Length: 410
Image (cartoon, rainbow, N blue to C red; front, side, top):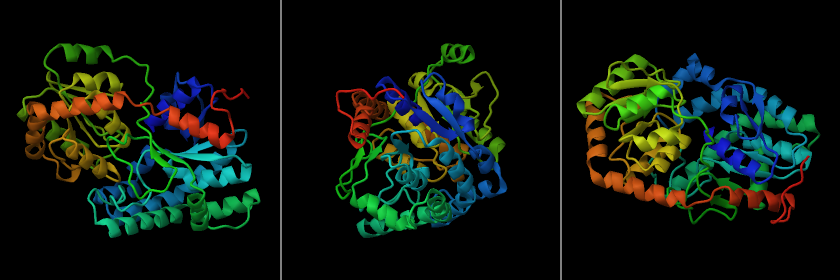
C-alpha cells in the first residue's frame, strides 16, 4: 500500500487531483500527500487474523496457498466492488493495482474513461520466472509461462461473480473476465510496474505496454520518535527487524528467536511490532510502532524484513544489507532477488526461523563488506531513477492531454 502514497503525491505535484481508494486502516498514510481519501470496506488485518486468514500460514507459496487465498478473496470482493462503484464516477482516469484490476477495468468501461495498471509485482506471464505468488524459483521457461496463465485464471475466479453482477448493474454486455483480459492484452493495455528494472529486468517476452518504471517511494514526512533517536545515538548501528503487515501464528516465539539471534550476532535491535505483534525487552533492544523507514533504515547495520514489495523497496533505497524472512505470496520472489543481487547472504523463511538460523545470516550480512558494497551500489542506481514521469506520460497519453499542459482542475 505505502508505495501508492508516493505515486499519488508525485502526481499531485504534477497538477493532478488524485483520490486514494483503499482500506480505512491506511488513511493515515495519505496525510499530507494532497490526495483525497476514500475508504473501502473490509479490514485486511482483521481478515488475516481470522481463522481463515491464519490458515494461510500453512505454506509460504504454492498452488494450495493460492487457492486458499482465492477462496478468502471471493468472499470479500463484493463489498470492495460496492465501495469502488461509489467513488469511481467523476474521475477522468482510473489507476488500478493488481488486487482490484478486473473490477476497476469494468468500471472504466462503463464510465467510458481510460484505465492504467499500477502494479507492484511482475504478474504478467513470462518464460523468464515463475509467478511470484506461486514460487520463488523458476520451473523452466515452458512451465513458468503455463503457471503464469494459471494464476490469471485463478484471479479471474475471484472476480467472476462480482464482475458479472457489476456488468449487469452498469448495463454492460455480458462479457466474461477471460475475454475482457484477452481484449486488454490485444489493445496493449498499459501497465506501469512500480519496481526498478535494476531489480527485475523487463522480460523480453512481455508484450508492449508492460514496463518497470522504478520505485514509487513512500510519502512520509514524519520524524523519527525521540526514543528511536536516543537509542540510535546510544551505541553502534542496530539491526532492524520487522514483518510489516504480515501476521504470525506465535508472536512470542518469533520474538524470542529474533532477540536471541541478534544477541548471538553481537547486534543491538530495533524491533517493529507490526501486525505480527513482535516485542523485545532489554537495554540492547527497542520495540517500536510504525516509524519512517526512509529515515531509520540508512542508520542500521542491516534490515531483517518479510520482503513485502514496499519494505523491500525501502531497504534497497537505504543501501544497507538485508536478511529476508519471507512469509507468503510474492515475498519469496523478492527475497531471492536480494540474494542474487548480493545484498542479502541468504533467506531465512519464517517457517524455519530459529536463532540458530538467523544469527549466522545476520553476522554474514553485517560483517562481509561485499554485502554493504552491493547494497550501496544498487541504492545509487535507484536514486537516479524517476518513476513518476512515465506514469504521468501514460496518463496524459490515454487521456488525450498534451505532454506540456497540466490537466485542468475539476
